[in-house]
Amino acid sequence: MLRRPDDIRDELLVLRCLRRDLEAWDELVRRYNDRLFYYVRRMVDQDEQAAHLLQEVWVRVLQSLRSLRQGSRLAPWLYSLTRHVVMSHYRERYSTLEVADHAELEERPTDESADAARFEDAELIHFGLSRIGWAEREVLTLHFLDDLSVAEIATVLGIPPGTVKSRLHRAKSELRQVLIREHGESIGKETHHA
Image (cartoon, helix red, strand yellow):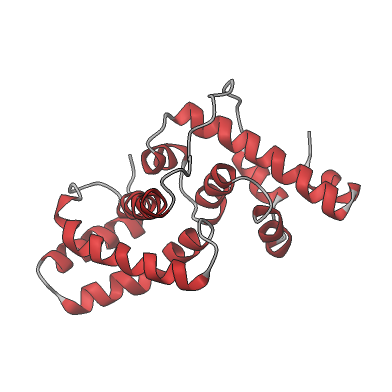
């Protein structure tokens, strides 16, 4: 598998951080802070709460960076750790909150490049994301906004790749329905090229 330049840069950055290079740590935070904040913000209600949880994420990153296996991609590891922090927050705060996986649906193939082209209007998408379920919002955010592959999302969420594909399919369908309901039939025609 051909490694991406960003992956090589991240691996070198991690090595520098492990050597207690403060400039490397600052660069790591600059590189991922906004993306992780956006991810957390999609899961919690308030900016302040998201900022607090993100601080907890960076503390955990600092404590467990050595556990990142050499050659593993940093981004999926960071998102997985971030998700764990948010889930812990919900478990502590809302002991009755159920964040259960939905039954796995039949696996359906996806045309990722066509799907990305269908969801170009970011403002409209953010509106729609705020009105769909948490699990669906999370998988769409990781896939389209954070640019993680199906395999990487499976790692972050701790579910099989087939389940990720099913959730993506269901999430895109729910998002499409929200946009049609809120903005009329023209949206459905723009977002559905079947």
